[in-house]
Image (tube, rainbow, N blue to C red):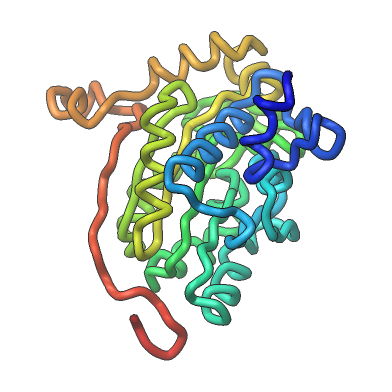
Length: 272
């Protein structure tokens, strides 16, 4: 790659001719690299400077995304991203704060922080890469794993109904909620732009392929293309959902922009 092509990226990513952070840590075929790509495009489109933002990652595959962004970032214990985000926003309310979390990070050990940050309408953007399992630690069942799905810890099928993160966020009080898949490039990038300019709690959930674990255990394939095709078969747009019965929608995840409203944001002892 020529210097002319690399230089425009340097304000956003820790590239430096590939000697610092890239190539990335993600498994071959993982959707987290796509999400990083879409997010960088959103920053570029908005002209936002990541050096004047705070990015937070917890523990998990998704939590590595901020490592590749040229920014101040925090990377620490599992499930506490929104606790840190709350403290940062109360100390510096003008600072844009973006959290990258996996579905296990956000909905399992971090579930309490998630519902209360949404309830308070904390002014942060949460990008959740939902790969349907605990991928970093070997492919265990997660709160978002589909019913009856096989994982490392559910060899006979998952017996627990899954959380719908969109419904959970809306019920908890979030003011901007969207869900897309890694195969929908334009929609993901546009959703991130809307989230970055929204005043209040934004959740962008992106359903992602995990060839290394979920694919091998649940679908008996590590082919990322086949996994993306399977995800497409399990998702429908809001328009498609309008013409489907409850039985047809059973087990499906609906994609789209579900909510974007204005409400006072949490500012400690008051709302602004």
